Length: 107
Image 1: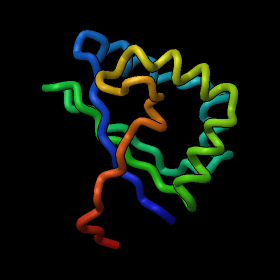
Image 2: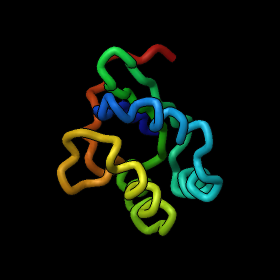
Image 3: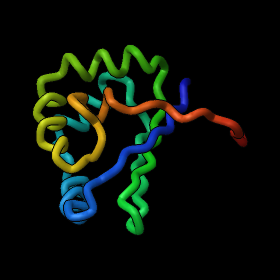
Image 4: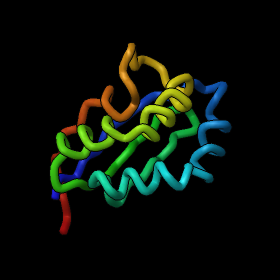
């Protein structure tokens, strides 16, 4: 199982809306994540600067990303969430991140 940690940056003025949307993620989006191998997905927010730390586990990162890219609900969700982020260019949040290096893991 691959453990993936990554960061994204929220627009400060949209932070509360972003949090609210994640209290009611669309059921079909949750089903797509599960189906495509995104497990133990967590999002942590630093309200001081709007930075997010995201973590999930997957058997295969590339397969998980490819699987979500093929899901219609993911395209809708990414377009809906896109305006909340800084510095993604023309990429979606689920493909525009760079995985962080894991330097310690306590089993």
